[in-house]
Length: 577
Image 1 (cartoon, rainbow, N blue to C red):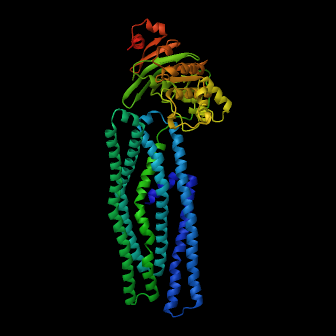
Image 2: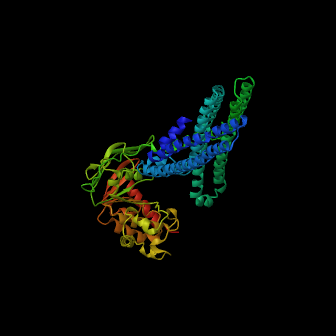
Image 3: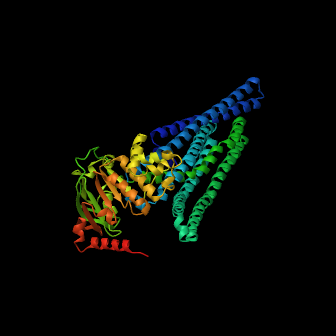
């Protein structure tokens, strides 16, 4: 229990940890004031036994009780506020810390770890820490400290009753330790099922159009229902397994309270205890374990807190790419790769590729699906780090730049555009948050999207749905290009940017791309003849290697993948119904 609390406090960070420590000190003071009830009772009972109840006695007793109740209440309020601030502050800070950490993880991490797991940690896990951890830590600490103070006070009254009390505590904590060990595996399973449920819900919602189109509703519903049932089972199983332990804990505390009463009576009858002490011990037996009983029941949740902390730590401890390079400006935008290799798990994806991309030239990368084109571009822009060889920008290894310094040189237009749930203006100025509205409009005009944006209800202040769901594919692509124009980086990476665009938007999109790529170094993954034939060099990538390179005319003169690729596209274009 103590180890789990320590791990949680270490996780909190210095500022929030201080709040928790301050709350524990206040909780200790609260326990002292709670324990003042026993001296107050002692004063009144003593006066009653001696038949000497006076106004002064009543006022003394009332004064002690008022000090106990008022000070205890005020301190508890402050301690609760500190613990609440510490809990919510910790989770807010850790969410931001995780988000910042995710920025610099290699892209391969997101292939190996589902979106549902990451979202579950930043939502469910953090929410559990916000709601559960704060209350559990407060109740457990309060119970432990109050019981410790009252135990010391009881020992001061009579060491024999104190000894029995300590024996009861040893038995209680032995059962509590067994309960927490039992809950360890259950807590891990519970949190895993929570993450699996989030993954299934996200998968179901994101794929709802495919589910309906291919009549997979029943199958997908069964998968979702299965995740819901497993989550329900994990939570129910944990509760059912812990209830017997909680019952035994509660029975031990009540049994020891009863034994304290019996022992006090026996000692008094045998003439080994004064009547005043006997009465105080009997009264104390009813209040000694009150808060410890609650602490014992809630302590089972400490394992869940521990699992939540470990899940968040797993993400935060995932090795980042080396981001401590220099904040340097490249001497040029020449890009080269020398004998680079990259493997995902056991599968070799890029195998010994070397290339040169001179500044302000256009390089098209083509090849069969799954040949390694996107992976190669990701390595050139350092979305991933190479396993072998090196990639250079301006004659300098890209790993020598800080990530932020390196990314200033690249703008990306992806096949699948993601727009944020924000205004169109803010989506365009994403790379330059402080850019004036005039610059935003100028970028939009160059990207051929000013006209349709102006026609929207709120113009540039129109809030678009998450992912750009309220816009067409061509509109999203043009906003993405406006964003890239706004960033004005010297290197432009186009990953199938025109693959899914309808013919009505294609002309405007090509005009937007032309405005974006003027006087830039261009790297493009493309399948359309019109987008590759004018490239300064074309690289044909297959099975992780460059199997052909040259201009369009040079490659068309060779018998190989490229000529077959172009001829196949020409036949497809000429085919009519």
